[in-house]
Length: 180
Image 1: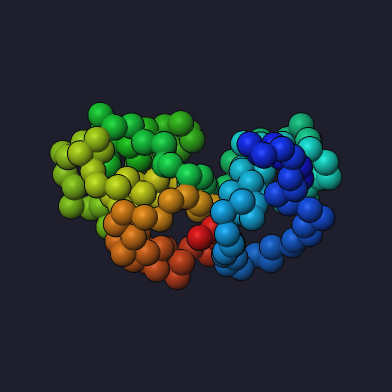
Image 2: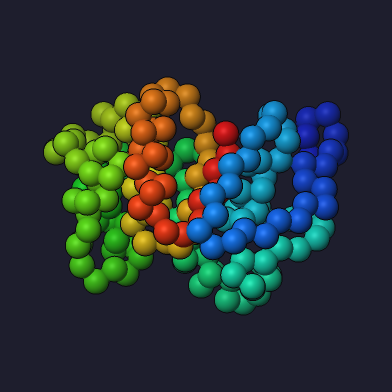
């Protein structure tokens, strides 16, 4: 894939071929500009390739039903999107409603999984960076995805976020892609 940069045009991804087996965990490690976030943004549909093609669940990214395939994914790309004037539980309830989940069953367990069960009435705007990152992970898991994409700045409260990742991986039966 060719992308623009301040200094001109450079290839962030060039002839990348990858097949992710069910249950696999992938981590992308590399220098800034290596293409980690670009690849994740492509997978999530936040960016289009300038050449080439890719498939998700056997569907080409330009397919009319690709959005249906992406509903099977959960993602945190760069900064998590959370409602700052809501509590952790309210954020998850909102995500359940957006996804059309029929009940609020599982919210308590989900918040416990990411280490946010004790936040009570605290609004997300008062969360630390690590808590916001974990809130993003909880939102990504709210749809019970079979493919989880995690990307972003892992600074701040890295230990707590890393602990949340360690809790998630053993209970998550799908695929996990992450950039570091």
